Structure formats: structure tokens, C-alpha cells
Image 1 (cartoon, one colour):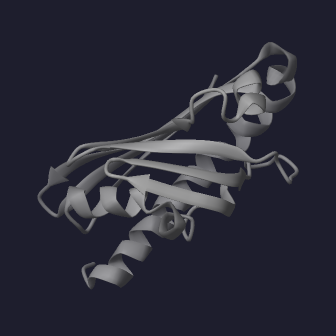
Image 2 (cartoon, rainbow, N blue to C red; image 1 turned 90 degrees about the vertical axis):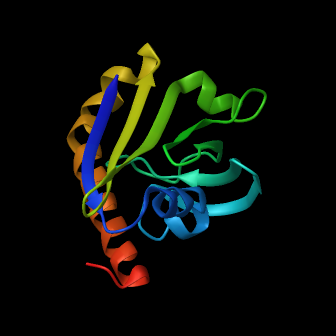
Length: 157
């Protein structure tokens, strides 16, 4: 299993950051792991999207994936593969989860960004070392870019 986790204080309220994370088309501006979208559907606290993911350090293009994000208002967004039968190939290769957990702090919101991938044994030995080497830095860059985006769009620093 490969896991990357980063924390960053964002100059906004938790609800604002969580809404940014749920707006996957806007969030893709700061996350290079999110490739071109085929579609995005949002209904309330659930967003589903079909896209071509990019795994840091691995050659692309990757097969298309259908993922979903679920908002717990004021607290977190949890992202994972859409349930079967969607993303059948991805379900056969790995278990994937990601989250944005938000806690209000004095100067904004402490965001904890976590991403976890547990690959099947047939590809684990090949892919795990690449992800271990590349995913943490990628997540750090993503969150730094998210902070810069928030600062540009809220006027706070």
C-alpha cells in the first residue's frame, strides 16, 4: 500500500475549501493527476466524474476511470472509485481512496490531504516503488498550488 499525506493551512473557511474540492473541474487546475473529463455529474453532496487519471511517475495515458467524491458538510470530502460495475478495470487493479479533511484554525482551515493506493500483487512490485517515490512530492505540489489558487481567488494571504 502506498499512502501520501500533506497538511496545509488554507486562507479560507472549511466550507469554501470543501466546495473547491467538490468542483472537480476547478480542482483539476491544481491537480495534474486529474486528466481530461468525459463528464461530471453533481447531485447534492455527491459528485461523479469520468476522466483519464495520471499516476505520478507512470507513463500514460491511463485507462479512463469513474470516481466519486462524497462531501460531509463542513468536515471532509472522501474520493474513491465509483461502485461496480463502473471502473471495472480499476477495481481489478487496486483499491483507491483519497480525502480532504478540514479543521477550522485561527488563520483559516487546516487541510489534511491523503491519497492511498493498494495495488493487486501482480503489479504491486513494479508500481509501488514508483508511487512511493513520486506520489508524496506530487501531493505536496498539488496542495501548494491549491493554496495559491485559494489566495488568488479570495484575496487573502
